[in-house]
Length: 212
Ligand code: PRP
Ligand code: URA
Image (cartoon, rainbow, N blue to C red; front, side, top):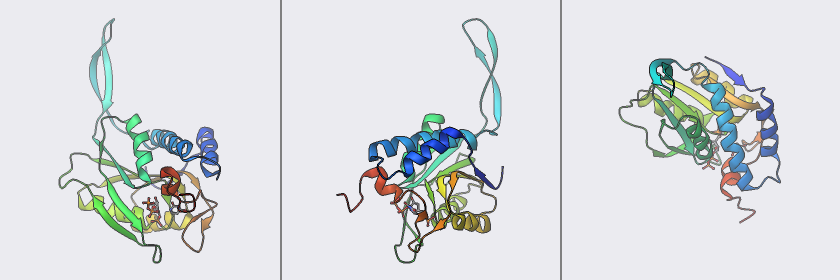
């Protein structure tokens, strides 16, 4: 799987609209992020390899399946945390590697403040999660850190993507497929996605400086 995958699923589209709505409360926002991560995760994992194993039902032994590879969920803090919950609902056996990045407000370049990627990873596929792909700086930085940890296979799951971020990922990380719920119009002059949903971290964690 390569390239950009923009979901057309009706459940995803309707949930994205509720997420965008400025009246949506932080509690509902968190719930929507989690459910959208489950739905996007379903699309992003549809081709994962399986291995067979015997399973005994109450009636007889039959052939069962389990994932053939170890998966790591990699949330970009803060806003990726809610998506990680949804991915863990889907793949409870996944390990979670946290990466803390924030955007410098002036340059919009990412600053790394936390890195819990393993020195030697036993997972072969990383599902990188962040609801917003804006300039793409944070996603590219997280991919670079993953590559340094020896992870070659990465899939990026975002909820909203801007064309600018998609282009940057395509140029700098061409072999990382992107799964997104919506491809928006553009970035505004301060690097926010338009029409977007505002600040994904503040809306999830009720830290909008105008409201606290
Ligand atoms: C937001 C968002 C992404 C990043 C996207 O995080 O969650 O990580 O911006 O922007 P980019 O594509 O231009 O890099 P932010 O820096 O606001 O940090 P936060 O999640 O802690 O609020
Ligand atoms: N980060 C956000 O939270 N929202 C945007 O629109 C862009 C980056």
